[in-house]
Image: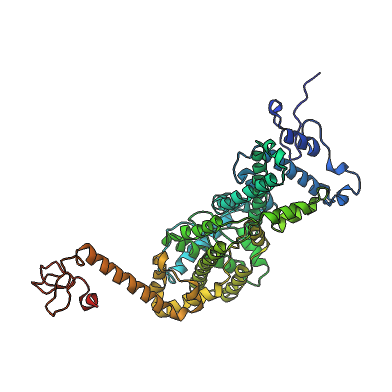
Length: 499
């Protein structure tokens, strides 16, 4: 009998010849959803009404896409590699979700984005002391945005995925009868791969949805695509289509926001790690509600795929927040609000000569405060809402700081993470100066006391001073209070040091 040539998959690619290493799950789904052996079937040939009865789309193309997705997931289960997230599956799902109307970046479009970035840099030079590093603003397609942002999504979501995978395995182990648990054995790896595949597909779908909505690389308050500014022209055009604003003004305003974000993270090097650290602090406190997963699993109807999909979209694997997580999220919310509020104020000052600046500013504020469907899907997946609920309060705080301290003093507030404004400062901006002065004074006094201690100023040889009071370690021959005795000058803070 003649050799059977390799068949083609529904996407046009050839089926690899790996008959020597057949995986039972992949082979089963290959037969069900199309493959080399046996020859599968065409979804267009399904009996009339079958899709509706099963809760599946009636469109044959949509049905074929579901079959391909199911086949991909089962293939991924067998090759998950033990990772908490199947990142190949996440990448593929993200690119698929971002596909569609994703035009390639033309030289003309790339040049327009770069020109807008250069003009934005010139205008920002007048409204902040943070300077640009001269990087050009890049133009990205949606697919390119996915590729450039996935590394940071991995950092943000992998700790969550670890807990989710452990919860799934724990539920399956606990529900299995005692006498059958030893049989679970190596199947735990399969269950972990299943969790990693499911999480990867959900995460990829959410990231792909964001790719169709974000204006640039910093929309969620973090430099997702690296240290240089970048815009997604297709999304900028879609955003401006519903506004009565010239396209050039929308592009310039988006470039201003992107450049301002980039300058902030460039000149405040600790900021990115600070925000990511808050996300990780949240992840460390994750507690999965096992009973909620068990209840949801019991409610899934195997004959109704929509019940399974509904359980996922309603947050089946979303963690239940603990008190520690709520505290971490409160800090994260404040940090994101401070970032967005600063950008909001700086861009407003830089764009004061742009006719539509006020309208665009208000539109962006509402957009960031409410979030879109993709952001909500991401929040349902990992329990994080990366949007600044207190943007307006933060913008008012930075506006007051500009009045009180000028541009340099306002931007100097970013000098150190330990002295960053808090939620209390957003509630009472007018009292920030007094609270900050008190904190700085306490630090100065501590430094002075530590300096004296290291110099032996508080040693056992302390004697009586000339005025009859207990001395502070100074040389009695010159009457100084903590100097080295060489010239009698006060190096310990003078009268303040004695107080």
